[in-house]
Length: 472
Image (cartoon, rainbow, N blue to C red):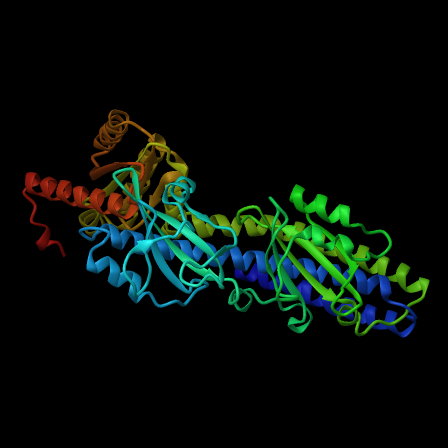
């Protein structure tokens, strides 16, 4: 697969070089580039917004994973108000967007770092936050310092199906721009986060004061743009852009915005006109036509590159995901797929762990070709009874199957059919099965299934009177 990408990237590099040469030639005859620069401006701002949105989503997701880990540790403690839990809250060392963590308890009590449990002072409601589950709050005041504006990233702590507490990480808005800096225009662009439910600015780095998107109504806009369109786009959750006069610097601001998957927020970015068009030059009408031809040719060539490599990439991807001998999904695919079961299961998850008995002995007595035939026969039997997307060859003689939302009787029937089929071919497998209802611990499901498999394998060799330690 790497060679395919290298070949494709080589073509792209060559295309880019040709494009630069053509643009350089165009610049020799250019008088104006205003339209080109304006379009480039919007593209840069759009890329920056996409970058910021991705970074925000990634950071919040990573923070939640961290909070999930802390929540799991807290669940192992005797009680929520134990010294061990307090030590966890006090000892948290930030290395993400989170500045510190806290524990929201029933009765609207909160455990903050380095101070005793106290009332939230009406700032937080345990019932309201627990009802929302995993979520990121809107702009709010810090319980410890009302002059600070923060966001809270909440994760529930659930025991026996009930939410017993909400752990949250505090994101200080004054420090947030450091985490989501824009690379556009050497960092001179301003960043905004807008709540599209009410139009309030959650964050704005252009000036210290925050307000509402409707406050732009008294700004002069460039011809072809309107405040009403901004408001409509924001409340409809649609991407858009506008040019209006800044009261601070008295020149046009180029403002781009689009929705993000975090809550119902919009991410926006703006840049002053003199920054956006610092290198503005005039071009003539011939350049516009010439560049249009360039873009058409380059777009066509990029499409050609994508179409010409798609088939090869698919084949390479198949080889990367499938075991060459059995055709089953391999361990690499297993590692990538395992995290998805937590979201795809509705009631339960069962792990069926197969280990082929006698492969080592067969290889020694009849050769590896016989051993390969055994593995393919076992793989075909498993594949016949279970979903291809959930069957993996994870080691030389080990296969793992995940079964979603299926009753134990059906699974046992499939296993019995597999054993009957393999017995006809004089092959035998040791099988370990373990199930958990939602919510489950997928690591525990695997480990218990593997443990049960080894117990079954031990019984098999004991019944056969084979001392496995004597294998050579």
